[in-house]
Length: 153
Image (cartoon, rainbow, N blue to C red; front, side):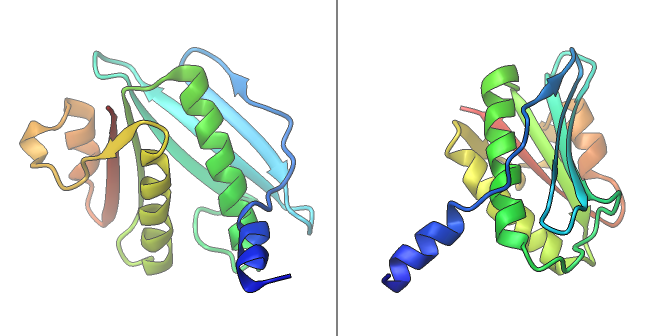
């Protein structure tokens, strides 16, 4: 196996998950890692005219990087879930945030934003705050958080 084949296999590796649990303003997906810890991807819609959905995920209730050793496999699974969520709900805006001091999480979310662009979205995180929808402005102005905002093309 070549190094390129190894990397492709690694990046295509993901956990099985049973599907989306969906309501009007909430979408959940759950899966377990190899050690039995539960990862929950939680997408919640803010009411209002902007069709803004916030995406977050936890491992056993923790939002921070846990050092579980399977970050690529978890990331690939979360990305797969976000892709299915986008297909199912077709949100106009998607947002997610990390603590500014959590450099590894900010880096991970920058990669996530780049991958979500392939689903028909554009990262507008650097847009002037006053040009963003109201809920996005509120989220963007949270102290101590780095907020990403993507809009459907």
